[in-house]
Image (cartoon, rainbow, N blue to C red; front, side):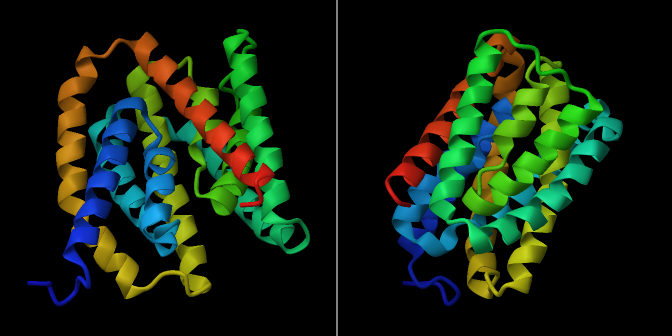
Length: 246
């Protein structure tokens, strides 16, 4: 028997499980929900990306920001917020004159270069300038590909693990609000998206609960390696998608 607000309960359950898996990864590492969920959701229904991910992302970021609220540093995040707004605006303007394919190639290559620099121990200091650049780049990347976490994660990679989780959550909360405002203004936010996101809330809660139980047992070095791996996956997938024409 189908629920009135769910045209296909099986599909909605699959969507919820995928989002739950992504939420577990993000709660543990600090980011990665979109990297895990977006490719799978695109195979189920392209309309799920990026709106449903942004809705669930806002819920998840709010939960994680509260969980790690004592490690939040709005002094640092303020510069990332300042970069995020023009980054979003620039992405919208650039997409009018530059193809999404070209943007994906540029962004994917940039992320991989940043990962390579990090692996080679080039210091990406968590200062005001780098937070602003990361926020700007995240705004461009999140608007064009729905994956905006890597730039911020690379700047925060050497921070205390809980501080990294807190700052990323605080950043994503505002970032998701900005994205949803933009999506609403362009009619990409509908009741269908809201229902899909609402159906996934129990999976989000279970995933975050499990992640909080596991997190204290995970070594900081492992979290950083997972972060670099997720950044690499994001860069490779974005670059390949651009090279293959979307």
